[in-house]
Amino acid sequence: MYRVLEAFAHQFDVQQGLDVFIEKKLPSQAGLGGGSSDAATALMVANQLWQLNHSKETLIDFAAPFGADIPCFIYGKASLARGIGEQLSDYPHTIPPEHVVLAWPNVGVSTAASFDHFDEEYFHALTKEKVMVKVRARSDGGDFDLGYNDLEKSSAALCPPLKSLLSVMRQQSVRAWMSGSGSTCVALCHSAKDATSLVDFITSQGLASWVHHGYFLSMHPLEKNGA
Image 1 (cartoon, rainbow, N blue to C red):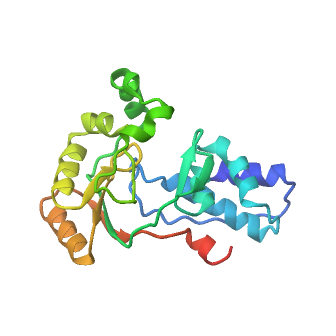
Image 2: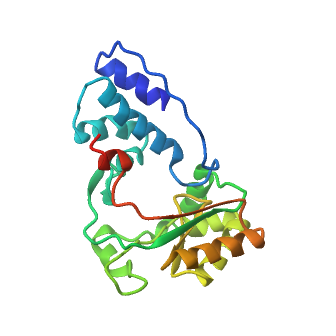
């Protein structure tokens, strides 16, 4: 985040300083984009406080070289990503009012190690973009398509606790998947009651040391507040 803000100030000749304080709540190596989210939010706030008022497109173009997943946080809404993650468009379907449970199995997965494993074991099986739509089947036949995480098999192979946690979450939810390169797993639940039950079970079985129950947001809080 510091590198992004420093480069941002330098590129646009900003003389004003900015104090930034971070209260870290996400586990490290969790695959939740915590660092990228921090960088994106700090960049959006700086753009406002420094009265630069650059467009969202300008911020995305600037931020992409610092991290491929920073643009999605700047975009601020559910989106489809192409390129390295910087070519974004609105997600074309309705985001359902479902509850989600995030759980981290007390051990992280190295992003580099996960990609290395994938390159060695599964890269040859990557689907060509032209036929991608034919194989990314929806799990429930509805309009809410979450796609598939190609790194899941590699991260699960490197982290047995992740594999065990994901298996349990799939048994007790509508759908479950791994976030990013892991090791956080996400489960989709129809109600707050179902989500709470899942949280209680995961905790009681010692499958995760960090658990969060939440729900989908249609847009970034800063976007919603007109920042």
